[in-house]
Image 1: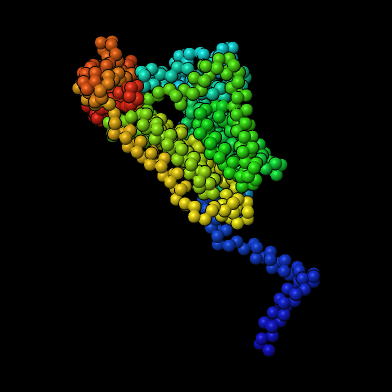
Image 2 (image 1 turned 30 degrees about the vertical axis):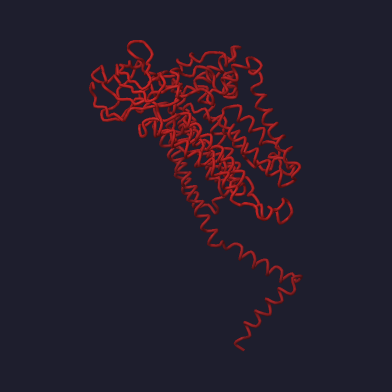
Length: 605
């Protein structure tokens, strides 16, 4: 009789399974399912904990924003009150994200991201409102170009020298060329200044470019929040709060204006051409890409990746349709780009083309945080800029080829590969290296995983590779340009035409200002070299140093010259103990040569 209860339970369970039509049995099963489903697994609990921790970091960023705003208490009583409210929101939010039933509650996520936008915007509004100058020449150029267009002038034929009054010390903000001058004309596609026109027409005249850049970054954050899955929306909050982005895009970092369009261009880009089932993604990608390309040159480098991806996707769906699909994609992007720039192309095609291609074809001085820093910071003694540019080009070819060959693996992460090419470039500015991170996040989370080719071949979607094919061939395609990158970079840093030795420095104002610099320049080549000299003290260059005699510096073949160079106006001496060096740029050969690192002793050398 002891087994009777157990036997009865088994009989009841079997009856529930065998007689699902019984109402009581069905209700019993449903109740049992409901109880089981409400018990989260350990993995789900761990995932929720991770998300709560991530949202805690977001609220910490909000709290930090309120504390930053508190530092601007002097600007307005409203600032004091708003700072206190943001701090309180940050404290309350960190608690709420742990007390709420689910960290994916839409109301809490929206409140958190709204707090992010406020905590980012409020301090920057004060900063921009009280700022008198731009922090980059590109922002000043956009301002001058927009105002010139407003008065009926072609921005591509107007001298940008008027931008000098928009910069605190103009000579420290120009983009210099290795020929001894600096860029003084509009140097981006027309979208870069057209985006500022609505604000100008509405009466905004103070720091109009900075206002538009900040607004564009906030729009990018909103797009990230809307596009990422609910479980990853905290990423949008953290990215929007990231100091390097907030710092760049509120202090004249004009790349911000292209990011909303580039983010939209990679959002579900693999759905292009699928028809109504793809919704907005069926056509928005190429339109947004064309708009992004109309702002700056950075999106241009994304075009081959996207075109290659669209071709592969089209081939997997229907082989004959792939070329047509790519043609439609590129035509749509080109149409938008041309529509934005067409008035200026017609107005003066030569000036527009020269201005638009300036960053790609003009011989600009080396700069950035990439490999070139080995030369600009005195580690290698110089670099052949032509060979380094070749290394950057080969690195780009390598990444595109790798994308095409290993498409299933790289389909969703290719924007993370593109900065590798810029790392090898002679100009590898920080913005080139980090701008694509928000873009990469959208691509990685909204693009469908690629089905392995082997699986497609088994279904007949694509033909199988013939037996005996050389499997090493794809790796060879990648290895050849990759080896070229290494070889070109090695040769670039091993060859520079000049040896520079510092002989003496003359200062004034008790050592606070530099007046002249005496150097000996040795020419290692068999050709005459005409160098142009900058001095790198850790700050932006203050302009080229010119011979005191007023004549150009010329170094004969296999000869040497000792010359005294006059400092540009307002050249401030480095801090005592700081390292500095002399940079000499030459057009033939296109190169940078540097002195060894010098230590500033705070007195005449």
